[in-house]
Structure formats: C-alpha cells, structure tokens
Image (cartoon, rainbow, N blue to C red; front, top):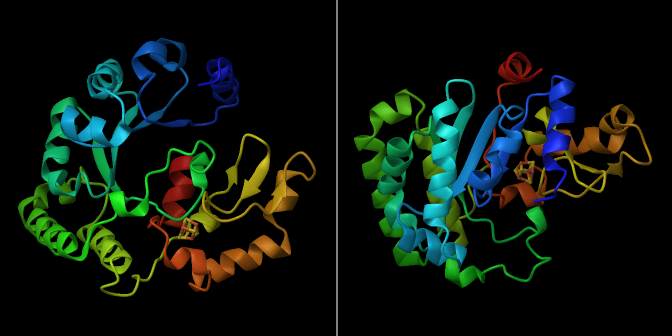
Length: 270
Ligand code: SF4
C-alpha cells in the first residue's frame, strides 16, 4: 500500500466523497488507525472459511492476520458498512456454507460471491506473474455438478439470509455463478449478463486512464481531457449502448453480474 494512502483518503473525505475500501485485508490491522476516519465502507476479500483453505489459495499464511484486522473494523460497523467478498474457485467451492457462517460469526453485515476471473488483466494480474493457471482454479465438469447441488441446497436452506440481504446476491445471481463455471467447463454456453456498470460508474486508474469498467479498455485519460468531456464522448456512449444490448464480447464471459438500480444509485451515492 502506498505510504500516502491515508492523505489521499483524507483529501476525498474533505470533499465529502463517500469512500469504499476494497482490500485483501493483509494490512488492515496494521494501518486501520490511519484511515478509520475517512472510509465509509470496507469490502474485505476472504478466500476460505479456514486457514487451510484460505492460505492455500493466497499462497501465504495470513488468515489469522486478516481476521485480526477485521476485528478492529467490525466494532465500528454502526458507522461503516463492513462486507465480506469471496471469490469462488476450485479450492473453495465446497465451503460456501462455512464461508457464510464465518462472515456471520466475524460480524460482517453482508457477504457476496464472485466467480474467479481467468480472462482479464484487471487489477494488474498479469504484471506480477503470479496468476494461477486456469486448470487450478476452474471446476471440472464433475465438480460443476457437485457445485450446482451445493448451491441448490444452500438456496433452500438459507432463505432468511437472502431475505435479509445478508447474502448480497439473489438466488438467481448465485446460480449465474454456477452457469459461468458450467460454461467454462464446456457444458453450456455462457449465461446472458445484465451488468450495467458502465452506465452507473467509471473507473479512473492510478495513471489517469478512464475505463467503462475494470475489464473493458480505457477510452481516455484525465491528464489529457476533462472527465466530464470524456464521459460524454460518442465512443463511450456507444459502448454503454452495446453493453446494454449485450453486444460486447468481453461481457459475455465476464464474472461481473453488477446490476445497479439507477434511482438507488443516485439516492445512495451522490
Ligand atoms: S459485464 Fe464485465 S466487461 Fe461487461 S460491462 Fe460489466 S464489468 Fe464490464
């Protein structure tokens, strides 16, 4: 984490910007005191319900360290939202129920799930050479069948957690994750994706590039062109239309299933 991160958070805080920290949790315990007054929402990534599962995915022993960081954040969860994020892959798909239980017992307000991304270079994945091969994270055809049974039984046993929105996704969105793995295993085609991220947000990278979402290419840079002008370029407006009508190839195989209600976004965020 860059040393001046707290100053950056402070600057946005002074402009009244709501801030969400999406983190792998490693430095949370150590640096929480520097940012606690500026962050409104924490999304903390966990990879499994036990040290054995979690650390086998991360490749380092850090499960307890991350839990210790979370225990500092959770007591302030009346003021801040504290959410758990699990990326489902081959080494943890059998543990979804336990992951929900861990999120509950640790004090998270919500838990969400995402399928593992094997396609894009988002989040700098290709730069450090540490990305796992597809075979080690994707499910085989027989594992996908088992995963579907696990999710079907979870959907009937966890009704209260869906109703209370403790599980962020709807049952249909969780089944979309199953369908994604089925498609990756060559069993079916990819499910239709209704993501509307580029209509609701834009991504500005640390170098100033502006992207429709984390996965689609940049369409300009705020160091060359004002943001407002960039967001209204004909090319990005066309991209938004193409995403809406499901014409963008990258969207067809994307792990993101974000669909934000425009009115809620306006009321909650701006
Ligand atoms: S589906 Fe994926 S690639 Fe397409 S707009 Fe959404 S986040 Fe971007």
